[in-house]
Image 1: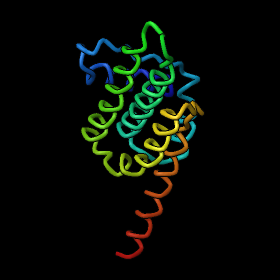
Image 2 (image 1 turned 30 degrees about the horizontal axis):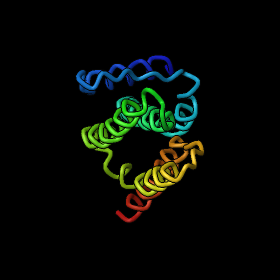
Image 3 (image 1 turned 30 degrees about the vertical axis):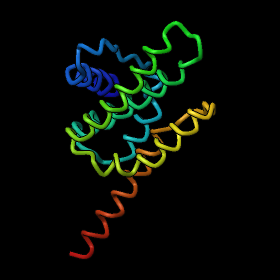
Length: 149
């Protein structure tokens, strides 16, 4: 199922992305594994798994593009623009998938990461952990709401 989930996520992203941007999304199955194992721990509909994996892929690729930004690099401008486009695509895609609460949850950590990068700190990010924390919080919130009713 993981292979199908990955393929479906990439297929969806490619249909949603602007062809004018000319960005090809590449991520190995092993790079998706962090989120895939997190998704397996939660009882989610298949379509939501596709959407969450898509969001994860966008965030990882956007971060990679921005991390490839080095002064005097021949592709510096392209990497900056690609990364910026992917971060806006992330927001657009998340809105379309109705994952606004996730965007709000991840926003502070994404902003801190972007600020750190602008200051030369290129530490690895882990959006899989943030997404899983969100899913846990969402499940707790849903549980409390169900008990209150």
